[in-house]
Structures are given as structure tokens and as C-alpha cells.
Image (cartoon, rainbow, N blue to C red; front, side):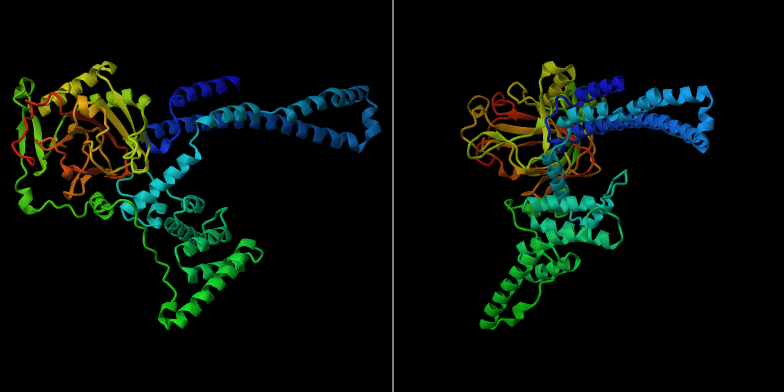
Length: 533
């Protein structure tokens, strides 16, 4: 027992000691949880074997004693007339039964429970569960998936079957409710009722669902339906105290509403709403355009524009390293010019960079526009790490390759950033260049001149890089890279380059990127003669 407990402790500490919660923000880190859970299952099975062996001994003893006492009780005096039987009876009651008592009281679970308790500090937290639930809702909204589709696990490109039970769906609805998101509360609680009506077994009851649902639709302004659902709840549970209070309150509000409408002669407005609710408007003005591009809709690649896109062999600024072995270059967009390069990184290089980066992954941050302080944000769900050339020769090799392809110097560029996206991982529309005068790096290294983005994995569904102002969508292809300039030749920011990383619907998205800065590029990318060059 002690041996497997110690082995499990070592495995868990080795895998998770460097991870700081927020598992949902990185699929790469969540894979560690798979192996950790496998270890826990193995330890649980070993505990069960110990318990089964213990019960087997107790059962054997019980069967033996049952046969013996049946015989001895039939003729107690005759049985004890034999001195050996008398001795054995005394011995059993003085020695054997106390030994059995010790066996029964032996706590085989103590080691497993102690081990599990120690490891709970490395388990996902409530924040992770809420984050994962929000991620599913984000995918639901972005890709226009109804709860039933998600519940059945019918997502494009999936290799494994995965379904949500009634209790799982109830957990989704409750997470939304606790966040004050009544729109998604209604969608998921209705899905719970649908699955319960279909006969699915669950610990969740209809009364629990109707309690959440009735209040959620009330918060969405549907008083008539809130009243109807509350009455249904009371028919199932007449003693439900909160529902009784809500019913009286809703009836009072409805009566006041009727009186007001009748006095204004607007009886037509008394019609009960249909129970269909609009998704609330949020902070992102280009939300609809952004999400439609993520779905592959609304791409403005017209036939006329497509005629201006070409493929070619690219040798940088006649870099000697590329004259013999140029890279394949493909135009993705004409203005601003966005290009894709093929076979930029080999599978071996990608795996090595992921291996180096994984222990360093931390929740990706954004800079607060008001304070300039780095902070986490719900609109950027990923983990990232920064790799130096001294970390491994492959990092230096990839940096030199990006320098040769772009014709720009990496001396003033930022470190290689590696990012892994989590459940529904995304980065909503943003600029790569800085628009903040307090950025300290602007004075020494200049602004972010250009972005070189390496795709280090294929993505089964979702995960596109989109440019809402352009109507452009670029899909990840493992081993390729896309490149664009963030600044015009005048040094002004090119606001057309506002872009986003769409939520990953199915798959595990890994990217790495290099941001080239202005300093050192004066003769490699000369200034233009006008502001808009």
C-alpha cells in the first residue's frame, strides 16, 4: 500500500507542481490532468483489491463459523463434552474473534484518502469549472450551436464520443445563473427539462430546474412565462417556500401591468411572449462580424480580389540561405498584404518547442488600457510562455529562419512567444501594435512593426485568425506561418490589421509568434514618402 501511495505522490508532484490552476485556459496543461486522473483510478483500483481481499477473509471466516455453530448449537453439551472442542471455543472467543475485530476495523482507505486529500490542491478549482462552462457557451454562441447539439456531442471533426448528462447540463445552467447570465441559464435549463422528459435518469429534479428557470425568465422580462413556470413548480412541490413567495409577487406585478396597459388602451400588448430571448448585446462592437468570420461566413474574398493573389518562391531580401532553398509563399490578402509561408517548421522542431514551452506556460495577459498594468482577461483565453535562444538550439534556428524570410532583424524583436489555447480558447479582436504612449519599449525599440505567426498544429474545427475590418479569415495549417506589417511605412499604425483568434471548437491549437520592432529596420524597411504608404 505505502509503495503505490508514494509512487502516486511522486507522479502527481512531478506532473502538476508547476501548474497554477486555470487549467481550462490551456489544453496542453489539461492533458496532464488526464494522466493524473489515470493514476488516481489505478490507486483506487488497488485500494478496491485490498478491500476485496479483506472482505474475502471475513466472508471465509463467517462461512466457517456458520458451519461450526450450526453443529455445536444442535447439541451444546455433547459438543463440549470433547475437551478439544471446549479448548477451541475458549481460544476462538479469546483470540480469534478479537483478531477478526482488528481485521474489520482495519482502515484500508486511510492511505488512499490521505493521498487524495494531499492532491486536491492540484485539482481544477471552481474557477476552472466556471471557465470551462463559459467556454462551451462561447462556442455555442460563436458557432451557433444549440444546447442539444452540444449535449449530444455532435461537433465537426471529433474523434471521440462525448455527451452531457442531465446533471452536466444542469451544471452548465447553474454556472450561467451564478454569473448573472440568464440568457444561457434559460437555454441550458430548458435542455435539462428536455432530457428529463425523454426519460433520462438523473439526480437533478424538475423542481430544481423550474426553480432556476422561472427566476431566469423573470430576469429576462418574461413575466407571463415566469408565472407559468412557478405554478408548474408548485404543482410538483407545493411546500416550496420560495416559489410560493415568487408566485404572489409575480401575480401582483402582472396585475399592475394589466392595469397600466388597460389604462393606456394597449390590450394587444398583453399577449404572452413566445419564450424566445435575444442574446444580450455586449462590449464588442464588431461581435457579429467577428463571429461570422469565425464560422467562415462573410469572407470578403471577391473574385476580383482573388485574381490579385498569387503563389511564388520567396528568398527574402535575397538572403543567401534562401537563394538555394526558397520558401513557398502564398498571398492570403492583398491590402494590407498578408502572406502565408509553407514548411516553415518541421514536426520535430514543433514538438521540441512545445516540450520546452509547456513547463513555462502561464495564463496569457493583456495590458489594461487605463493603467498599463498586465492582467488576465476573459477575452483572451490561452496560456503562453517566452523562449530565449539560450533555452535550446531549435529556438535560435527558428529565429534565424524568421529573420531570413522577412528580411528584418531579430535583434530588436521580442522573444519567441509560444501559446496554447484552452477550452474554447480565443483572443478577441485586438491590435498587435501599441496605441499607448506610456509603453516603455516604444522609446528604445519602437513599436511592433510586424507579426510573424507560426501555426504549430492543425485544428479540427474553429481557431481561425480573422481580420474583421477586412473580412478576412485565415485557417491554421501545421508547419505554415502568416506574416503581416502592423505599421504603415510612415510608422503610423495600420488599423486594418485589427485581428482575432477565433475560439477553438474542436482540437488543440498551438502557435508561436515573433513581433519585430521598428528599431534596426530603418534600412530593411525604409519609410514611405506619405502617411499612408
